[in-house]
Length: 349
Image (cartoon, rainbow, N blue to C red; front, top):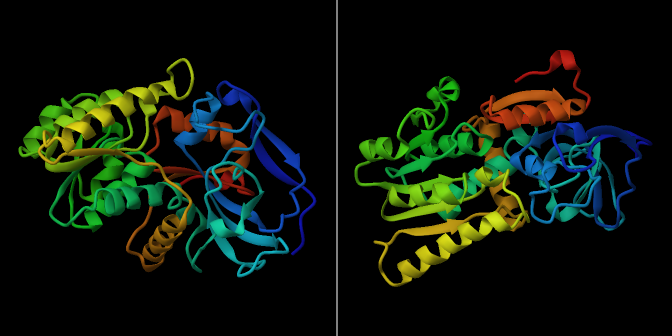
């Protein structure tokens, strides 16, 4: 196929809002020894890119840089030390940055094969969000059939998949989301609470008087206190984000101190036998061997029809600023995707 001479990419040029999102042209790099150059078919929009706009993402690159956490695409060139991968293969990866581009270089060890027939957008929706949901449910909480779980922010990209995978595992799923999202979520088979108009604690206590077996909370330190009180004996609380801290001032790490202190206090109490077996943990996705194993399983489920992600919107790559606005607004349910080469006339879910 050869290396193309130029391609479109999206760059963040500095701190701010979507006014710092810039479209530019650049020459794709020749892949390094273990590099693989991928023509991107779909890439996701996530909370990580919103944090990067505000300088709130841990260890983000210096401005300007190309964001983009995950991608699906076709290999166009491989480095001289690459074995097992060849041009023409469809692959997925989670480079964390660099995916908002027509062409992106990824290390060969980070690639996962995408099955034939799986839509690129559906596959992209499973990378960051799908593996996060799968690992929270099956590796962190070890959910069993018949258990009850609470998913905060069930209308988001991870939340939807937590709900779908939880139901598939035989769990009873309670989810919090604003009323505007309920219609899109009703068919999943979950019990919904409007966190804007209802008393979430009272409703959860009404639905699960003995407490819930696992809670998945991306909201931040203050929410964790309320979640902890809703756990059943032996239950587990899993913090996997801190969306409520986006507008905090000071260093990016400062809001996480409150989270760390809470977890340390609860862990000490657990070790002293004072929590009834309840435990609290943080979760952070890593592109390691477990990640590749779990993503392969998720692709198998999508290919077989067992699982389908909820894609909220497919937009051209050049519409990255609008995609971020939509993500920030919370007006879409499911994953927002950027599709290089997509005509504006064909944009949509």
